[in-house]
Amino acid sequence: MSFGFVAFHYPAPEHVDEFVGQCHQVAEASRMQPGFLSVGVWVTPDGSAVVTTGAFESEETFRAASEVARELGATPDGLSDLEVRPRQVHFLVSR
Image 1 (cartoon, rainbow, N blue to C red):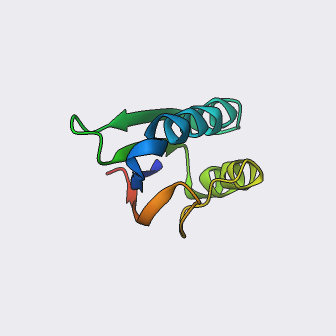
Image 2: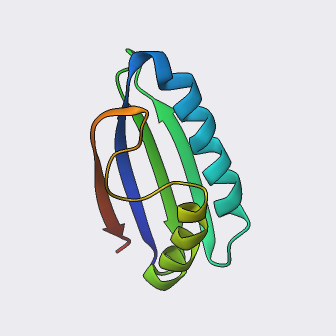
């Protein structure tokens, strides 16, 4: 069973490009992790939210990859200096 996530981030309008760049750095690091399946960085048409997605072979491989992301400053909870409100993270399992 695969394990994934969808996260909605709300960077300040003046920080959207910087935030997206940071998301792509984390995405690149994720691609190198064991158990990686997919990653995506999306921006809503109005630019009000950045949506990140990811999938791993298992929750364990996701948790291990999350440690690498944490080292880059990405966390599944909380609020970065670029965000104006807390992100919403939804974890998923394939069926």
